[in-house]
Image (cartoon, rainbow, N blue to C red; front, side, top):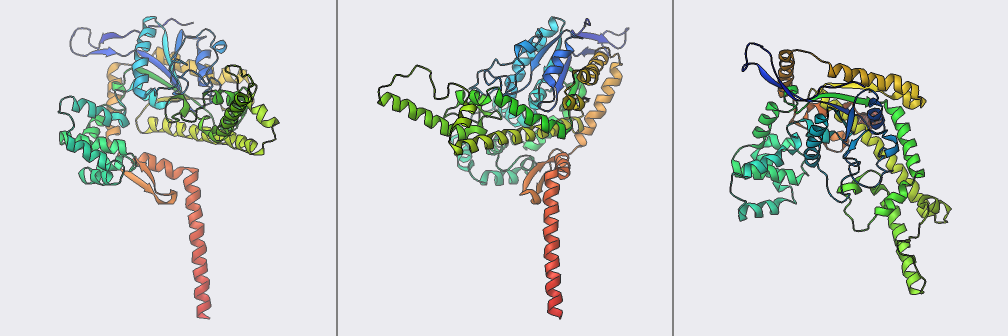
Length: 486
């Protein structure tokens, strides 16, 4: 295992000058990201054979306690003694935001570095990673600006709060924002009332256009290599979509066999908030219709036993064994249909998540200039070969990290490159709003999202269908004109 020198230290580009040219070298961290089911957690553990690493989990659902099968947490027996942080440590009922992740992860990174170990951030929640390595989140800047600006200003007046509340549930607030700052209005979705009101409130308090504030901050800080919090080695475990789609379906089936449905049933509550905490994970809401039926039946059984004087053990439920097997053995065809529909929804939504994660990685690389290195796990997943996994994925990642840790480039050239990157970012279009009529007036933000959307399979199918219908109408009109002429 390699010994590392990862501590922050000050270096001087000119040995004869103790003041000019002094720059603080940033601590090195490795970030392993990629779409779900691509093998990120396994890669991190396998890399511990080469480096003294400690893992910080960056999966927004795996941070919570519970649902270990559904969230696919790496079992303790598979961690091979590698320390894992922020894995199953957060209460499932709280909202663990990107800011909360950042505030929790920064001191952990510092402690790992003090142990002369290599911090490895592992997960597919890219907005967690953005929050950790960047000075701020672009989409959260409105909220941050509100807090920082409002600290120096008087509180909301009664008229201000009444105005915002009155317009919050209608289109009036968005129309008002368009009048005040059309550039900022184009940046957000018309239904995002919370952020619309933040923008209006910011302008009312400061007199500054939100778009001017945010564009200035983004141009100054966002995405520039020399402004990231750490010296980052970004590695993405990539897999071809057809192979990953098949593997996702197989993994969902394995999770069902391992008791996924029992896990979800145990946390199910008819009155729970499924937009916060662990309950928003893919694989929970999809079973809602089925679990409503099961919960009602469970309650009815309890009430019947109490009415008839039967004794019921504390904690006993109708489904003490495997809920899925119980449903399969029952004669309730409706429940069986709901079960199969729910499983299919989990698979579909997971495949959609894979595509969102891939698009986000492409966005981070193309739009923000992040240098992401890819290792391909396609063949190892399709062949289920440990040998191919080691040769094509683990060793490739090891070489990338080894090169990253031994880099000895001049700081001047690094800064020059980062400045050029920053200039490109400033020139890119982040604010223009595009509306796709073919896809039901879907709102896209920025030319990069718009170009990606146009290349998507769903958009191309809809456009092709519309063109076919248009050709059909033209043909009918031509036939009508021909018949009229004759």
